[in-house]
Length: 223
Image 1 (cartoon, rainbow, N blue to C red):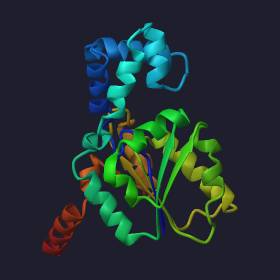
Image 2 (image 1 turned 180 degrees about the horizontal axis):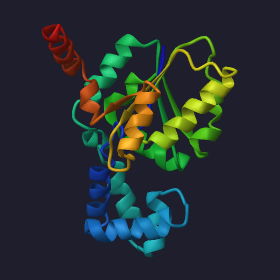
Image 3 (image 1 turned 90 degrees about the vertical axis):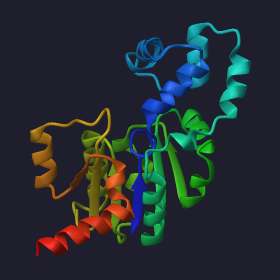
Image 4 (image 1 turned 45 degrees about the horizontal axis):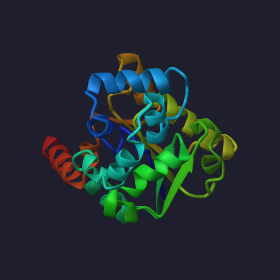
């Protein structure tokens, strides 16, 4: 099995990471988020720290980037995220981190995740949208796939792309949606996830081995 993890809001608590960036820039979180939204999200531009500093007209760019280079971004992983990765590492044939956005910025973030990076067999950076992913289009057709991501729409696009590459065969593809700040969360959506036989988790910790053991004990007790 190949297990594919998304990074932002799935493994990485990107809200806390952005708070750290705001602190690095000497801005309060409200102003940072406003600047982020106006300079990147509303313009459909991928974020980079350097581009943000340019947009702000900062003359201390070199000093800020040097401080960023010393950051340990791995400490902003969600609780139990590392344990989940370790468990998947043991139980899958290939562990992949698939991250989208500005390739240089995503690589800069991943480089600062610490030792957890060594758990992945492959790290894929793609500037394009998930539905146009070269990586997804070229996954082996004879291997089971597990996708763990926080956004339903994106995950559906990933799923559809893999199914298309398999001539419409959806068997052997497992999907887990992990709720995040940006996850769509409506009863209609939950019904759609249930209809597709996908799993929906309130947080990544639900996938930890410890929680799986508790769940198994609970199911056994019910019987």
